[in-house]
Amino acid sequence: MTAPIPELGKHAGQVVRVTGLGPVRLLRALAQNPETALYLTDQEGVVVKVFDLSCGRPDEVGYGPYMNFRSELATFEELQGLETLRLFVPTYFGGDLDYEHQYAFIAMERLRGHNLRAWGEDLAAGGYDAAALDELRRALQEVLAIVDLFHRHGLVLMDFKPDNVIRLDDGAIRLVDLGAFFTPRHRHAPGEFLYAATPDHAEVVIDVSNLQAGVPPGPASDIFSAGVALFEMATGTSRLVMDASTAREMLAMPGLYRFRDSQIADVWKAFPHLKEALPLVQTQLREHRLLFAEFWHLLKAYLAARLPEWEGLDAAQQGQLLLSTGTTFIQEQLPAPLTWLAGPIARATVLRSLRISRVGELAQLLGNPAPEHVRADVITHNCLLRHLEALGLPTDFAGRLNVWDVRPDRRTGHWAVAAPAACWELGDNAPFVYLRRHYTDEQGHTYWHAVDEFDADLTPHGRANLAQLRHDHRAWLGTALSANPRA
Image (cartoon, rainbow, N blue to C red; front, side, top):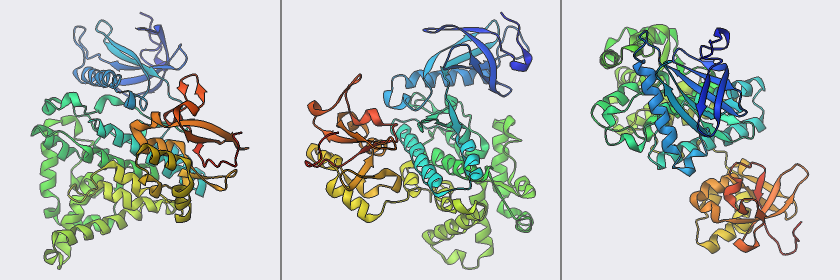
């Protein structure tokens, strides 16, 4: 075993063996915390996540890091059998555990890009220009579409946060840090699931209570986390800031938060390590910074105590008042160019009885619809729509296209549809929509026509089809006119 190089990371210099790759040397830590570190290696495009299992005893390994390793390894291995999903996580090369040296590792693809938090910082530094904002909305919709796809396959991310969403240099999205995933293998014994969510991004009190009762987590957990992630991306913080005078007023009314604090104290008993990360509501008020998980409960209790008319309202009216008040509070904390996020954030994080039920609904709230005349042109003239109608496939998505989903097709005078947007809408049918390249414009955007299989272009991967353009944001489905010869 090579002696570690402290300034490069505890395990720098070590060599791990990965099936198919052979010996892989760890060069330096790219990121690290007390239990894990991500290492650059001597193999191009490969990084290794190391789990430090040392616990002070030579014949034992640390239980927490060991279980985190087992959980993340199992999720990687489970995703290998789900081709649709493994496209959206790092490529997995292998993993193993070294009892003698008290560490475990997972070798995976090195992703080159920025996480959602860094992207938000870059957006702010650039002054929120209109084109960047549209690109942000498009990418956020794609992120949420990926989460929705995982839900359709029975997987809940459980620890969705800005740091765990990577946008690659080519615009593709990847999800990282898979250790917290709740997958179909857990459904037989949800009480044994290793809950590892981050309190700032999760409803810990609800999740823990449900797991203890044998109730598996569902999309509501990820929808909440996505709402918090949107707020954090926009503001740089995951907590809401409260005016000092309002906080003092609430502190003087312990009935607003006493029960909730008792629930948080119960969570501490089960998970002592959460005591600092999950403070009492009373503490949050003193610090003037509220977790989203506590904000809505506290606001509802406050409205009920302060508004004489509250008890006379029916449940729907109370819910609407709560949602509108909370939306305004959130909006006031967002940068002016991002205030349109307030509604989606509120709808995603509000009490579960009022929350949207699907991530897809949240994605739609982030849209910026294309003009009506553009959508009408697509419906009437676009070759993709005509082709789908002939195949008996749905075309209603044309009425939901956003401004970033369409582009003028200069050679035909009509509008083209973004290939990735069409691919998402068609799902498993995308590989069966065959394509022929029409032309490439002066800006490098390529226009394609939907055609029958044997009229499609030949590629190294078979006949050209829509699925092959899933991540190509410069590919468009145009309008085929007989007067326009193929370029």
